[in-house]
Length: 411
Image 1 (cartoon, helix red, strand yellow):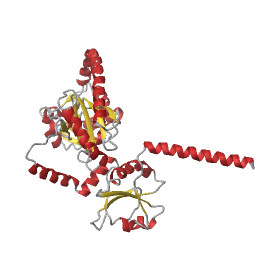
Image 2: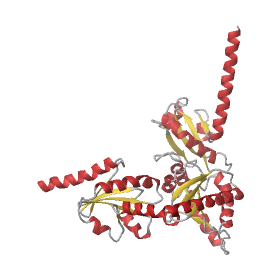
Image 3: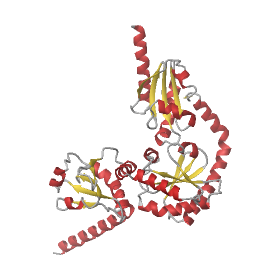
Image 4: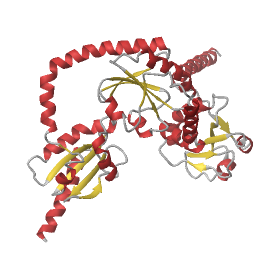
């Protein structure tokens, strides 16, 4: 009898401890505000608003991986009373009829139900937050609506806006603007409730620091410039990043008051002062190293591109300095160029697509993302490289095109 009581007590303690851990973990994660749809309520609820629905199975690993992002969407949209879209989910292991009626054949299946449309729209893109929010914006027509509202506001506004100091960044100006100096940037979505509450505070911060030349306050609309936000690993809104010379240095996660944000800026600038002094002392050695590495990769531009690529094989990387994938790839690209030093039939090159003089070139070459890698032979673009970005794989790829040329010569 005593042993049974003891076992029961141990079980209670274990459950309590598990529950406490669950509570602590939930405080770190986004609460699940997702609307649960079932066979019983689906048809009725879906007619009350626009719905973005995830059809899932609990055992599906892709569904489990998507869950935190889906919860973030729900937390941002379902907590707003006047939200024009709701985030929901259906467990297909328990609601067979609903999933069958909606032709769900794999998990997760994401469908957007427009309250005024007969058929839903299936989501077919990547399942990251910027992509999902851009899709919602597209379905809601938010971009068009936003532009119309801004045009109307401009017509009514005779006196210029009093807001000063806040810089709006996009995929065209981001590289040029952030290539020098310190930047405190808000990555946001217009429909996000937390972003809307932060907006006047961020505006006040920009105004307060308008005349401070040591820092720039800016913002990026992730529903408009999705690839840019993805490169900076933006997974929730708003995301506040400190960027130095196009590189992400820190992510702000403190209180969002003007005073706290200003204190953060002051601390970052003070920290940068010490770092700059140390860099200045190390500058001669560093410059020599960068110059030596830079010589082996041919810097291409609109002016020299036709001349450089007209003979033999040229392997070209089209990139943006702020692109995270490009930064990670840079050392390997340098090593690849070094391996072909002395081979007159191969050139390893690069084109910075953020430079104004190169934008037409990148457009003509059909560069749609960064990095994009093409191989050219005798002035003609042969193909895009989509393989692994390891030194060995890229080296073998270039060599294979040289071997093909040699075989034709022998024939």
